[in-house]
Image (cartoon, rainbow, N blue to C red; front, side, top):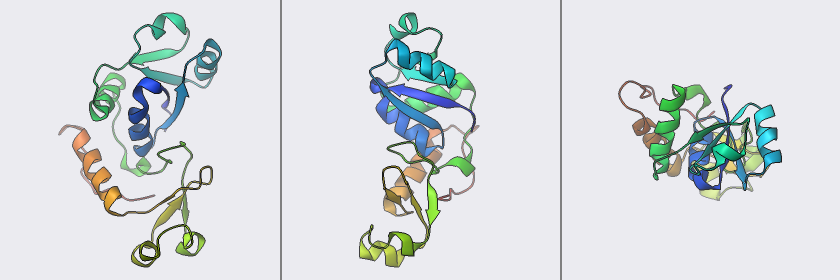
Length: 164
């Protein structure tokens, strides 16, 4: 995916949802001029609820997010940029640190997940930056349903989602 984002602390949950959708989205924390310039060089779009930033951090492209709810924030970003959800990128990034996940066999993670998980599931992905392991359990199913509901009938994904 070519669209890249930086999310400040006012939209942290939005950043996580964008990562679940497969978008390269870094957390910026407190934004400085230097950081804004670095994001501009990386062609990142800053997502924020802080309307005063647009005057302070040129030449960075900024989208000022208005909704409070992270799911509505995702819809706003998709509408503003005319994005379409693409299932092949869903669940390909670590929700916490933004690293691209690697598919791993159960043997590689057997000591990193509860015993019953390694017995029941056969599909695992790992983040080699923070060490988190992901699998399609009940939490995954809830997120999957939410991703389907995020978009209206025109942009809704019609197929079931697959991990990696």
